Image (tube, rainbow, N blue to C red; front, side):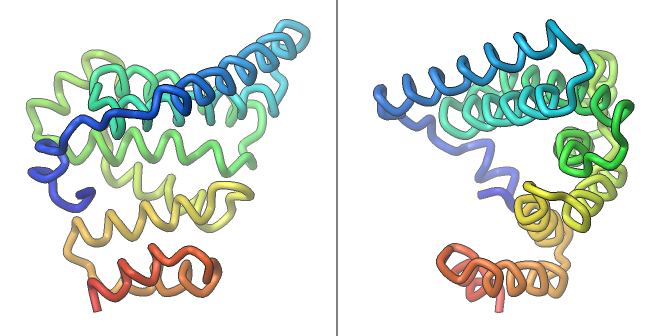
Length: 191
């Protein structure tokens, strides 16, 4: 689905389990409350800022992938990227934060030129190559999100018809996470 724009655009809206959705929203609300309390004391607290980046990413993914609310997802993505930029001004070695910048740039930079122009007018970042560079930085040096960045790079490679890079990334993920059968399954599909 992620390597084919047509399949992604025509995906169906899922019906989430209401209990799971409530629990998901509750946990994100707790995270926001804790982060906001910490940031009220110290607006440059790296952990609280990183928690906000993660929460924004999770909200954006849920809005796009589960509820098919792409505009809401775009808003969460932009907010997460803005917070990540603030965090990186405080600590440029917080390599996991580069993921938020990378995702926004890659996804939106893959859009058609007129769409990219309109997105830039709204403050979005749309440089596909910058996105790949930021994803690589997280993949190489990230503490928590490196595997996710490598998975995204594999998807980007497949979108660019670079099956060898995708195979290399997926093979390494399959070895690192033998319990996750999805990596091996996807690797078998492109062999």
